[in-house]
Length: 191
Image 1: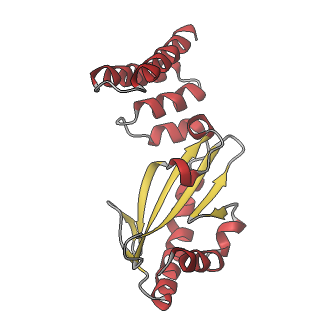
Image 2: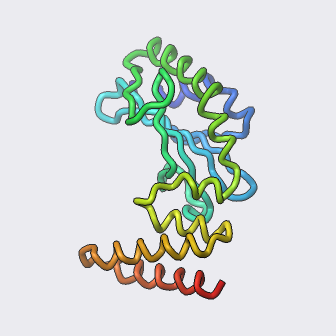
């Protein structure tokens, strides 16, 4: 299956997503909440074989991504979806022919309605979103905690991020990231 053919199958098979506020572009359904949170569903067609796709559910926010498209910057708070529900790792969902793709998308649509969308609906504040972010992403978690007013938690995350940066190999961007993280720690200290 080619990307264009897969894209054509997605839009008409999942009309309920537009009914609940999602828009579609480039294999990605995105719903933007008024507070800047983005609910994101990536339908990721295997670029080599075109015989399987993965479905990734996650989030973005204006604090992290600005106005850039989700398909350009990725997601956080990720959960993987299979034809049986949630999965611990990305699942290869078959789509090696048009008929199989339609069957797979119909199974996935049921899981979206019953499981995924209700889970996404529950993430409706920056503070809830921050609680989903793993400790391995202290900069993102810190930015979100700062946005929801938890300066103590944000400061701790930024200190963790600064420690990581100082231990990491030198790069062209490293000094800029250190300066930005130190600036954010100062913002937390002034609050």
